[in-house]
Image (cartoon, rainbow, N blue to C red; front, side, top):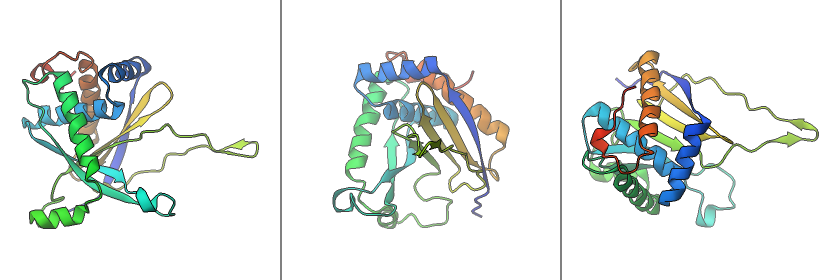
Length: 219
């Protein structure tokens, strides 16, 4: 039975690691999104023992003739990567970059139509993937009304459409990892460890010649 009861927790990527990720991304010619997404795939691979990982992503559908149209235009895409243990960090980063570009190029293909074409049915919680990844590509802008600045107040989370979702929220010199998860599937302590182990993977990925099989997902 599908349930959608949820909660969220937060971890912080501290300035030193945050800046290392920015420097490494710049050196390799990739975006920080690719770095964080590849680490997420490695984490899932370590936990599941699998080397074929499919993760959901939401993409802005605002393009072309909809660029100046009011409303919400969002499409979901499935991103498949293969974090083979023999690959180096740099090899896998390039692979995730290429796969992401290809997936984005086909983002206008309706997700619902893809599910129908694959004839996956709706008997499972989600037909193509159970986990989501989101990266906020821009820092939150300051909002000022006259001489008053608006304060952003986090909204309480009590639902989760997927098993869990990792949201990366970059700030000026650090990043927040927001983990939204289904409380009927996971305990808070379990997800806290998962978020901490994600940061452990991020730290090790700074060494770009390291093979994925030598990355540990535990502290």
